[in-house]
View 1: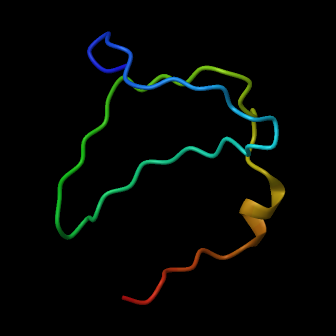
View 2: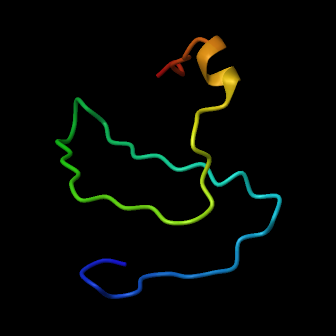
Length: 60
């Protein structure tokens, strides 16, 4: 919902991993996010592989 108006809705298949993220190009834009709420059966903790795998940055 944006400004209390439904933007998009669909049924999520059970195989969907339901990953969520926000992205912006830090050198091109400015981003501010506030009052974010997510609802649903989301995990309460990060998967263990998040803590063991180093982050990678694709080459430009």
